[in-house]
Length: 114
Length: 114
Image (cartoon, rainbow over all chains, first blue to last red):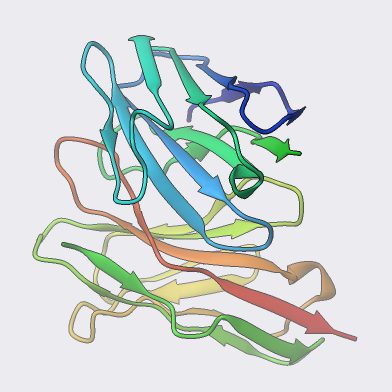
């Protein structure tokens, strides 16, 4: 299994500002994934991040709005640029330790944009 | 692309009665792993069940599911629902030999009433 830690647990920011969410794994993992979840709704995959390459974004998410860095095999950062109230949601990072294995999730970061 | 379908957004059941959450899928891959995730309120998703063997029943925490490749289904069942089972349930599959990316369904909220 993989243990994932996220920082911060929650954040409140003003519209138009940018904020960073960090994800740290307790072991080296090939891929890290970022998900967005609005209150009581489905998980939405935002992007896949592999070390040394640009993140691959899903439809509806862009690198300008949600740049993601993956500088090494245990760390990833999601940035929310020009935050808007519509970005208020929970952001999860996830990963797994082998192919065809389950993904493990970080505890999530609850973002509120005022 | 691959997809997972969960037709019910909300399932409500009385405590002590059986419950079934439906899951069907589409994939072009032959090697596939299937999962049921559960997400309790204010927590991250976690794996409840996993299977990759056709027609084999998998059980955990009183829940069970059987992968049926002939009907492309992996329904989740429990013979006696408990109040503590109230949560969001996701069906998911992993089909990539090169990454541990998981495709999630839209989720089914299970509400167990006293």
